[in-house]
Image (cartoon, rainbow, N blue to C red; front, side):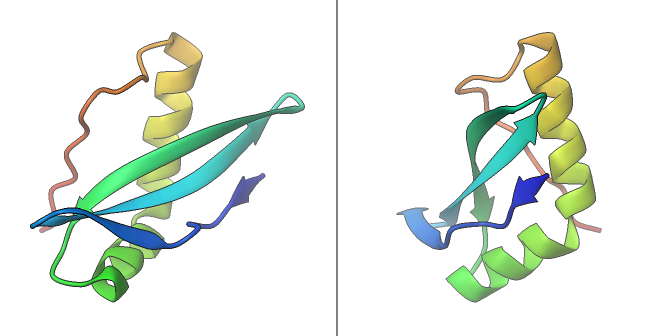
Length: 77
C-alpha cells in the first residue's frame, strides 16, 4: 500500500520535494524525493510516471537499510 505524493514544494532553484508514504508489514515509512523540474506540476507528473521505479528503489533501500538522507538520481530518457 502506498500513498500518493502530498504535494510538491520547491527545494531550491531546480528541484521540488515530494513526500509520500510506504506501508509494509503494518509499518508506515515517510519518504521524500527531490525531483528537478521546471514546475510543481511537472515534478508531480514525473513522480506519477515513474512511480513503479521510485517505489522499487525506496522499498529496496528500506529493506537493506541503505535509505537515509542519501541522494537519488532519476535520469529521464
